[in-house]
Image (cartoon, rainbow, N blue to C red; front, side, top):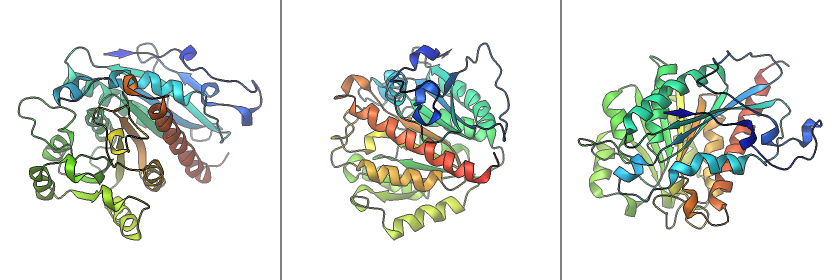
Length: 329
């Protein structure tokens, strides 16, 4: 249920082989094979800021949720789009830990595998991006964060058009994860931004209210983050010890992100998503971000993968600035 990524899969333009200020992501990445190497503890003062990436190759959750599949190829295309982007922090270093793979229909086992590996990665890196796969990646993301943060209160912030709180009596899917988590863990809170009225039944709104979910509708995020929204996000963050943030790409307007399972009409603008990510990841309580639903076969000019790579690059750099300000080099 795991496969490594080779260093030669990271390619891109090279402006200089020695001048650090001219480097791009493919020049600062190392790859680790979980099958062959033990992860070494991070060193706080080793002149680098340790960022991480792990992929989740899975379509099973989307298939169970009756969506259009294709996100299994998301991690590979994401790496291609991130590789040539420039590095703007001389201390930033990225380790690629390969991909957890969902074999056939064994979704639950793949989520457990992702959780086990992620818990190790989080202990040895300052920030980690998990790239799916469908939004079922979030459940594995949660398992890893919970394992690495025993007895802590975890707040989940989700940028999404959907609550993903359907029943899971028969089989969990990409539409059930948040109900699963809230049912089993009373030390978790849930806040979702970008909810679409036409993307959720009244029963799902009623369920969200029943579970005490905080949510902000898409039409409240059309042009900017209001003071009320920022205050609500900050208040939620303050309640928890660790913040897990997840982005379902189907929350972004289809004109910017066509390559998803459920294209979003009248979705969020990318700069709004970027602002939310920046607000949350700079809180000093967030160490991981999962990105879901990149389905390359539906993309146009790679616009979806390029958008997500740019968002991830900005998160890595924002985190590096925060970490650098707290460290002595």
